[in-house]
Image (cartoon, rainbow over all chains, first blue to last red; front, top):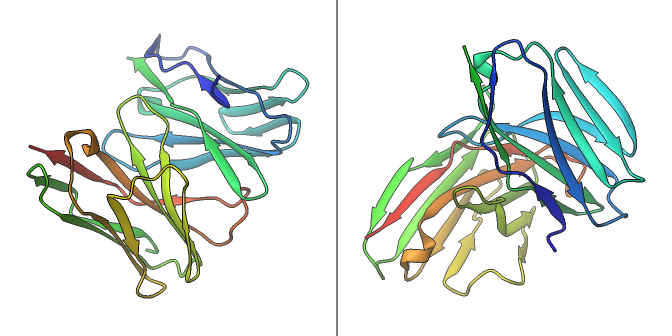
Length: 109
Length: 114
């Protein structure tokens, strides 16, 4: 079993839809949870960062962490074609960061 | 703008012919990373430097080596590329060593092995 599991997609939704992206993990020691966005032919860039459990909101994006279920989510409201990208979750404790494989998201105009 | 630069963006090499990928940063970060990313797979950490301290991941093949001559530059050497080494190679930096630090990525070098 991988430490971090993420559905690779692709996930295709119409413009304006609410998108839910998810990762599960197995290591209960993880404390830092991140979502990176990677556009085609570019490097990943940090989108959201959450420490421990709870929600964090930034504009149209909301990150949720449920440590009891070892499950994290990224919600995108009012999705736009410019949100089309691969979204990678990453998490860790201390010095090691473990990456998910990324979910490819396609927003159809 | 402060950034992470990778050269070349695309590299084509022949099976077994050594290749060097380069990375430079203007962020003045202490930590630099090299990742290998294959299609639909998680980025795989190959090496990282905390300042001059070199850290080799346990499962990084011996075929891969790295150099960091100064704070700004880092190189990835692939001594004898095989077909399985075709991938995107990403360089990243962060201000500190902890996993809570944001990593700043370059655009990557796409390596093709013929």
